[in-house]
Image 1 (cartoon, protein in one colour):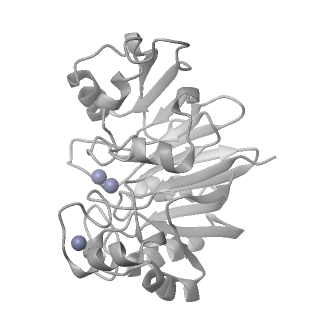
Image 2 (cartoon, rainbow, N blue to C red):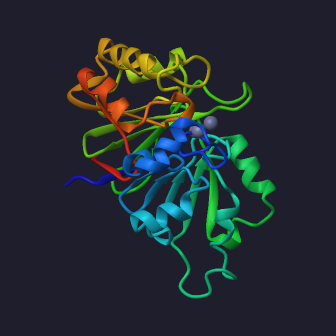
Length: 275
Ligand SMILES: [Zn+2]
Ligand SMILES: [Zn+2]
Ligand SMILES: [Zn+2]
């Protein structure tokens, strides 16, 4: 039996249409709607495991029928505000949940994530939660046979260890690869030991070339080719691109036009994969 992995948001930090932006890409997204409406990045595996808790968490609950109170593990990629709104965790406390408490939650993240949650000024214990510091490349057991391994991304300030998570379950493997530039060597070496059934790779810059901390469309092709060269892609691996900024300009259909001939799918909010 597989478990459903849902891509809950596919935008870069400012969302798309961006809240304050009258540019053509945002105007067109507002006019066309559908897959051009992109919330901030987050993912969920089944009912127990969630990746990132950004500013659209509430909207994603409404749109996709999520039951956050059932979550047991929250994996945070890095401390940027589009991936972590610590204040939302406070609403787990008894004052806000007077009846049956939510399931106990373990929040996994780096030192910067821990600091932002601590600085938010409430007690995790009161919120039936605990923090667990991640160590790059050290697998984390999430129960029911699910293992998450953080790999180093090329993203965020030099002193922050931003990560992407490799999820393994029942012999299948999925890589969440947003908020990264070209991975550091250790990550490539680690990925060379894996066979991915699905790879979700970011394309923040769209038709612009990527560079530091993010990728553009041409870079996505390069990343895919490098993974293939290393033997890291299973025969039927689904390669999916996500985390788009309006500054990258291409609307959903334009992204599909570019990527489809290369066998790469374009993510949209609510897209489901199997793991
Ligand atoms: Zn981001
Ligand atoms: Zn815009
Ligand atoms: Zn970021």
